[in-house]
Length: 198
Image 1 (spheres, rainbow, N blue to C red):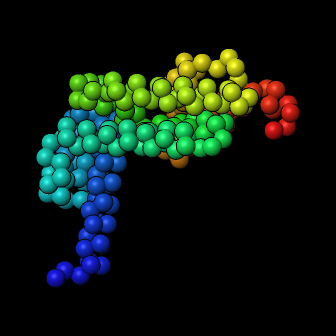
Image 2 (spheres, rainbow, N blue to C red):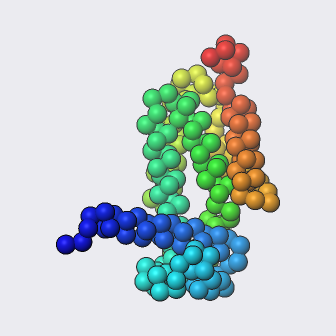
C-alpha cells in the first residue's frame, strides 16, 4: 500500500506543475501570441513536454483552462466581497483585488478572447457578475459610504483605466495598480462620510 505522505507529496507536486504550466501559458499567450510552441511553454514552466501533453493535449485546451482559472478567481473575489458584512469594505476589497488581478494578468485575457472568441460562452458569467457588482454598489450607497452618483459604468471605467497601466515588471505593475486603486477609491468614497471622519 502506497505511503499516504508520498501520495500527498505527489498530489502537491501535480498541483504545483499545473499552476506553473498555466502561469507560463498565460504569459506566453499575452506576450508571444498563438505561435509559441507547446515545448516552449513546458520549458518556461519547468516541466517536461510529456507532463504538459499528458494534462493538456492541445494548445487550445491549455489556454481555455488558464482562462477558466482567471474566471474562477474573479468569481471568488466577487463572492468574498459580497459576503463582507460592511458593504464599503466589500466594495473596496473588490476594487483592490480585481485591479491587482488585472495587473498580474499581463494582457492574457485580452489575448485569449482575441484568439478564441467562441471558446466559452460568457453570457451567464457576465450577467451574474454585473448583478453582483450592482448589488454591492447599491448596498455601499445605502450605507452612505459610496458616492450617490456612482454608476455601474464607473466600475468598467476603473477596469479599463487599470488595464492601461504599464510597467517594466509585474511587481511594478502591481505597485502601480495598488496606487491607482487607492486613488480611485478615495475619489468614489462619499465626501460627506470622509468629512465626518468615519
